[in-house]
Amino acid sequence: MKLQDPVQVKIGEYNYYIRPFPAFKAANISGEVVSVVMPILGAALPLMGANTVGSIMDQDISELSPAITKGFESLSGDKCEKLLRDLLIRNGNIAVEIEGEAKTLDEDLSNVVFCGEIQDMYILAFNVIKVNYGGFFKKLGDQSGKVAELITKNAL
Image (cartoon, rainbow, N blue to C red; front, top):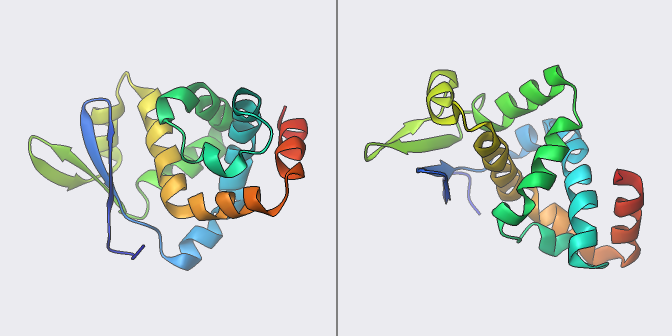
């Protein structure tokens, strides 16, 4: 995947276009991302079977939305807000289609598209994580059948 190639996702009534982060930006926020993804994996693994860490990243987001919300709620309010800003608006890597025109997602536009639909913000953030870190979690799952067991034990 190239830096300029967007991935399109539809969440609610909006189409979003997600471009990957530059490598060092992705590395910079990776610790916060892992702290969110571990509770998501921990909540989703019992539903999916023991050895499917990698395949969770390929699941239908609507099936994972309670786990996604739980993952973000595991952070303090300030850390959650910082991570959401880092994932969604700080880097200008997301556009949202409004009335047929793609506009860069910023704070004002976020207030419009997520007003009353805060869960859609979490789902978009998870999609950004998938775009930027999905390969990492698939490789993690491929390394050992015990990974799923450890994640479930540590995340719950």
